[in-house]
Length: 124
Image 1 (tube, rainbow, N blue to C red):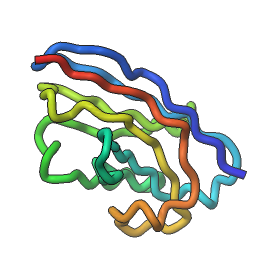
Image 2: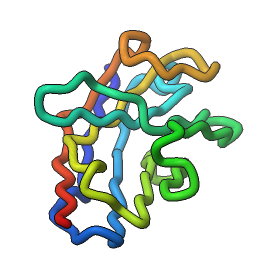
Image 3: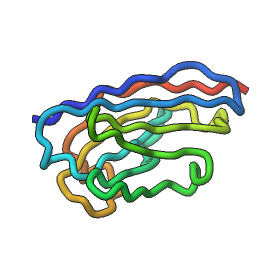
Image 4: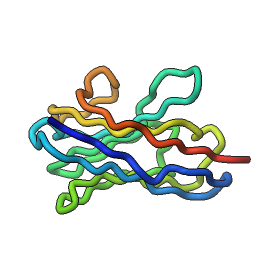
């Protein structure tokens, strides 16, 4: 059973940075692809970024390209989302997710395991 625990959220001013962490445990073969999603109040959950655990290939939503990076530390079983040049519209609950497939997936429905989420608030 895969367990995902996010941390690192908080309140930051526009233009600032935050780094989110997602500690993964269990079910190694069920988390070949790791993704970050976000959900603002009253809106659907949206894809932010993903990384293929083995090769380190990455993908990003257009809204965060050039500002966010995703990485993983295999020794720590942890995935990171570095968020720079934050904007008020980045405010949301950020979720870490895992999928068994190692192909690129941006649909939340195809991720099997989810963390509890961490709040990111960007003030203007």
